[in-house]
Length: 332
Image 1: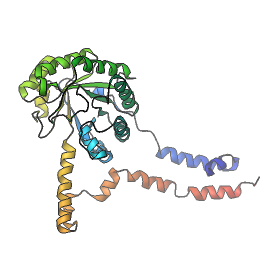
Image 2 (image 1 turned 60 degrees about the horizontal axis):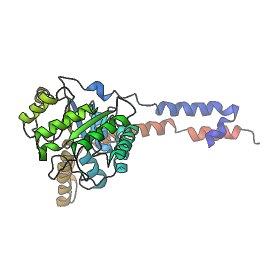
Image 3 (image 1 turned 45 degrees about the vertical axis):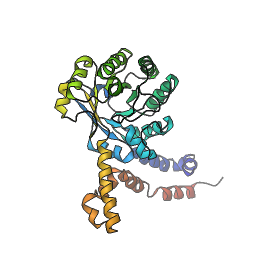
Image 4 (image 1 turned 90 degrees about the vertical axis):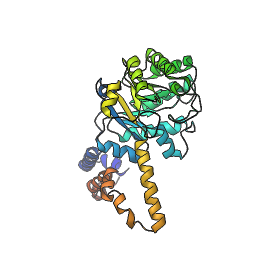
């Protein structure tokens, strides 16, 4: 309000413009992100670590990955403290998409479960995730309520319903650079042959990337690569899960172009928290934790406090400048 009053006074416009100039320098827009499509190449593997909240996104972003993966398991657990078993709503998840994509300088692949319902829900979810800043949406063919991959009890919907969801998702997006990742969980209950059949049907429906969940051996992965390798393939690397944890080069040899690591970070975080909380409970001080915590000042920088410090410095005299300008302004 003070700036609005000042800006109406010819004698004080220089103050207002000076203030606005300082603000604009601090609030410059981030450069555009590269398209995810441009990062997916035959003979290479795009490494996408799992992120699940603001802190994990900032740290992964700072590390310099080319793309990130918003994990459903981690995001639901971090946000709600419940299992990834169909308990989170579209609204819960799309708001997390908005936060994490806003923090990331690189493309963010986002888990959208089953699309949170039927075909109309899928359309709504695709439009919402794209508008929130996701670079790709992952949709699966499980029944609702779904279960996290690599866990027991997963059931899939009929293939015609699953394909219809992919067709709707493709039609709902605004930009062809917003990619549709089609996941099938059919391998566990219906076998590899049915999983590959669904993958081919998803490709025919317009999916950009195929994700056959939970192959259980290198031989199965090689078969997926042979029969679906004309499409970009995604591997879900879960430490302790059903799929072999291999080297980057081996995944490339098997035909994969994208690898997501949804659990690595939150499993590491869980182990670290168990340790420091245990030490704090046992010793009733944090002296034994000093070698297990990061540098506080460095963490402040990661969290963006440099902007706060620079902002405060740049605006330290703004109120005094406005006050002096108002004194000089003739009373009406």
